[in-house]
Length: 196
Length: 334
Image 1: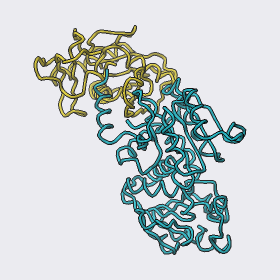
Image 2 (image 1 turned 90 degrees about the vertical axis):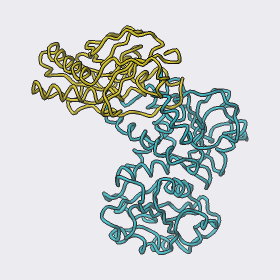
Image 3 (image 1 turned 120 degrees about the vertical axis):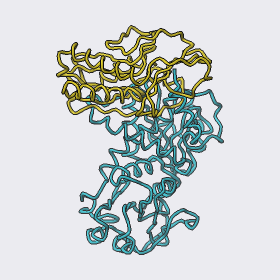
Image 4 (image 1 turned 180 degrees about the vertical axis):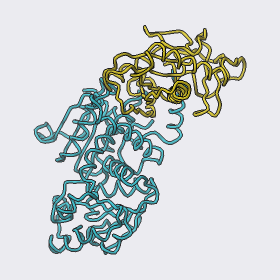
């Protein structure tokens, strides 16, 4: 699953770690995504941003804050935990749940923009779509990711991409954010093991 | 990860907090348009009840169904148990049916522990004799934390038939783990002999401990387990150890009144106390479903290495270190 997967965990051997995005580039990518959301949703009047824990949540909050600063548009933000909808629950020990919080506006009839850090297999997004179905019926669902690293295993595509990053499955994309990790960076590392 | 929940005393602080935090997430589920999750689809939970129960059985059934598990209810009445089948043979039958979890209530202390040695799935103790009732203690702790915001340092007074109460036992051990201070109040005849060894203070004067209590938990007098006269009359018991409006007025303003049910109104608790805004009795039932969902989720959702059944594995959930590792593994996940 994209987001959670290759973004965390113990850092593999430091050999061959390459910086992909720095703090300034992450900021610019989010600003651009914000503007694209405004353009493509006619001013984002009925948009709800839902971040997928862990790192999708601060990204969604940053997007909303940016849009309020620059354009004066207030967009409701929430979080959508997908743990209970994962297709790999039986493959690993029980997982700690993240927090789901739907803004007061609800999601019925709204345009929900899912926000995650990395798009990889597409399985996280598949789970998120299932979770959304139990929460209500959005008018449309879109997907914003900071990094698209390819290797989709499901027919899913992003609507807004911060950075397209061609990778091999052996590589690990590590996203760090100030809110969760104390710094902003995206790095590409050659992992010791097969990704998935 | 350990597979069973037999005793609240087996739970580490990390385990207990993980269950309460998970329950907190499940508690929001009831407000959703579709209060159902696909998480345990294809798993089978057997409710094996040798003793009567309304709350607990329905609560476990609702919890399992909200997580999409299949539920098989088995009560001793009307089953082969009435024909003399032993617990072990019943267990082997369940095993043959492929039960992923067995929720057991039994009149004999230690029955869940024995069962855990015979079946491959997880065993959840839903009350065994006068021993333990861990999910009740967890839902009580959950209710206290929701109402009062914390558990560490909380002063909890448990009043009544401590001797026969598995709820009291489980609560004493769990609350100790969670950092609360427990005081037991009961007539001397209704205290266990070994109460000195429990991590709790003992008092015989109910009114004097009330001003220093954040929580008062009233217990039912379990006449069905009594073969002796433990007190002169119900009226005298009620006068000394019952919670009426006058006694409730001695409590600090923030204090709450709990009861695991079923209540005997007019004996251990007066009707106006049971129905007062301080009473959490109805909340406890609601919270019970969330807490049992959390227990079933944590025991059943993960991978299961094909372990041979062994009596030695009757601990709580995962030990602290293992849980931390599994959280890390989850993050590093695919």
